[in-house]
Length: 593
Image 1 (cartoon, one colour):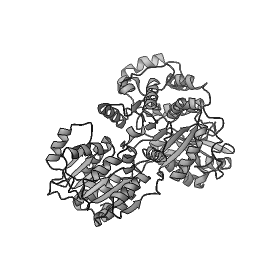
Image 2: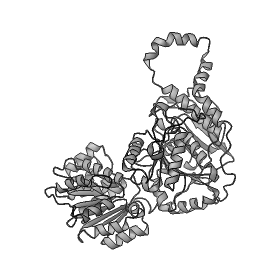
Image 3: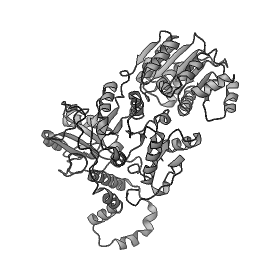
Image 4: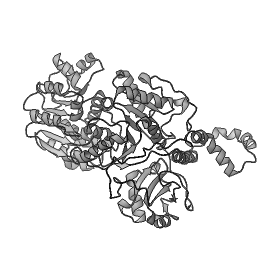
């Protein structure tokens, strides 16, 4: 079967593992599960969000529960309603072959009477948010005086949200001899206090370094003036046609304002903050999970508990006050083995914060430039061409072809292609072609770097920018494409940098000395029966093609969706904005929707 067999799980759990399609345990699962199964011990586990922590404590907890007893034996505390429901759903999937297992979710915003009824029927495991749990203990609805296991999931999140006193009160109602398992992405002093006060000589496991960022996330920052934050956000979205992102703001007011402006400008956006009702939150999150929203603008508190594996970008519209909060933000992308990008929009005065975050998460940031209007136009043009190429033909038009052919008579192939592309492209080009450069003229507040690596200096002299006709649809991200290029060309990892993957094409940089080797390598090179084409870009700063053309070059592979730049099709527009209900307004200055 899978390597889960070696962790000590029983047959019923291994059957659930097989049904779920799990093949290899994650690092936190591999470290935590044997410890929790073998010993009755307290445990502190430090691992980033998205590394499989629920299974790491869920499988051992289920295996240790006595299903013959209806007594509550396990309590899982989580910071938000969304995470509470997610943990409950996953635990129910893990325990599908455990007859008699009852797992109940307790959270605010739902009927306390219904939840009390479920508890009364007997719940061996209770998954709860601290506020509702404390309320039900006070009312005598839940008895946790005999539990054997208490799990604090996302402990740092709960403490950041002000649940310290609630957690203390809840734990005071539990027996002294229980096992406590604490799972957290970071280890601030408040989490250490909980561990010292309520745990007995806990074992500790760490996945990665303490408080470090995930290795699957590339961290980038863009220096702009304060008044240009919003235009910069739009350009970053337009330069990444397949974006599926969370945009973080510091306040509820800014969150609502940015979301409304994005919606008015034609983007698939929505707001998530504390002023929304639970029903409105559910509507927004359901739309986000279905990708009806591609840019979710959120506060840190409201975004806690979001667990969507394929988020491509996290955009820090404003930096948070606490470095640990940045770690949680960036952990929303690069999950489940996928890569992701965390973008930060900063002013010159905020560059010192970037340096502080780098030291804390032990990861270098890549300084990048806000794309120019022309660069964005080029990216969108290639994206449009590939969408046309991959469009499935509607056979219903066959009956109209003779009349259409008559209308288009006399137009040669090249002119027809130009006209088809121009239908969508002209409005976009008219908007962006004369826009100004948004990049701050002086980013010298950032200390100098001299190593020229990906995380280091953005090299302006002596570098060449290339276009390559493979991208995310072909299974590449910035990490795997960099490895592919390094292997094919025979260069060191640090010789290839500024790798930007788009939906059906990508860009990368090298020093000018490698250009002949690169162009020679990709002359008539086939991968899986398809020519891979590399050309020198016209603009070393960003997009564009203008170099040598190789025989057989073509567009990208099969597509996931046809969305452009996070913008919505008018007929499918999501009604977002003020409390999720502001309508789309066509400003008349945007294209590609």
